[in-house]
Image 1 (cartoon, rainbow, N blue to C red):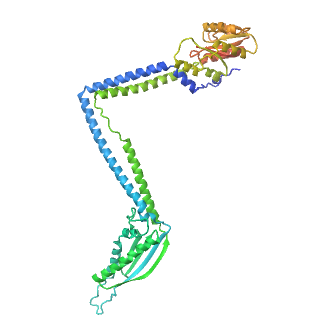
Image 2 (tube, rainbow, N blue to C red):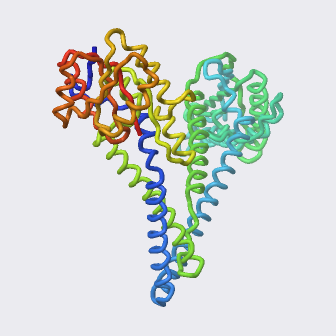
Image 3 (tube, helix red, strand yellow):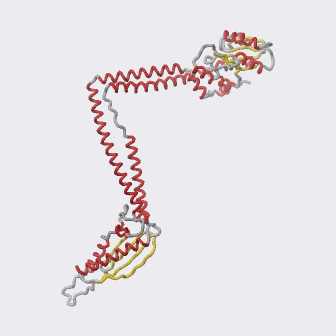
Length: 464
């Protein structure tokens, strides 16, 4: 039994492929509209540019605008290239630090530590008669020791340690962090702490410390006076120092920042477009004409395609045999093609929409399907909106192929009372519709009339 789902719920089911091929049927008009739009807009652009070419003020203004834009472009490009080179140099230095800086090799949870405290004695005594006292140089001497240690070239010291040859100053913090010296000037105490990534490096630094202290002691004995320096305490151990981790994270963030800066600068350079000289010349006239022509072609193609897309949807005409199967759940008995000679593309599009007859011929295929679906009765009524002449011609062609079956022409039940009367006689019905002309509204009315008359609809025949 026929059931038009779209008729029942008011929805319009659209098959995108059918819609695509249906719109493409108008390719001749679309191509013509595209070419016309391209020629019109291309001519407009060329003529307008040619008019500017003859105007000295326009030529001068465009040349000045180009010179200004070019100057800005050059300055921007040079600045970006300079920034990029600086970032690359900085990244190269940071990568060198990554391979050589001591601070980046220290495990914050396994830091080697060596400490020592020294007592500095100047044998200072207050004068017995109390009229004056001898100068106390203890604080001066302790400060001198600390200053000597601060001047110690740790980079050179570190270079004496085992591989890797970590001979560069730390990029995130001075290598001075590996050696700290503090004093208690009032009591003549000098405290020294040495940190490192390995025990060997700590020992190398501490050996340099002891050598510096010995050299400074000899110097101070000559310049200030005799004094003694002796060890109060000394120890070696491993400890945790999270400051190393913070410095390493800071360095890592700086590396990422430099890398991001290089990527951003490269992107800006890539996006930087050299200004085009729009000063009118014959070349710009041609270029403007071509540019507007291409825009016209695209615009013409889009507008014409959109127009026929909307037209096809709103007209809701019979576009393909697949629509009949999908919307009315009714078989297509066959397709009768016209005898006009068509271009290959038109033939291809008709085939995509199911509008090409088989090799055996349209009438033979239709007759075979009528015999297949005609279960009982020997009468077949041809109705449809294709016109009485087309119905009569189809009847004449099918009659010799359907021996024993009586074919009758009913007409258009949407317009002809005689066609409606013909449905009152018990018979099988074949709906003959015209491609691209019959609306789905007409088809629904025909099918409703057939159903209400109690007759059986064998299927559809589509004619061109």
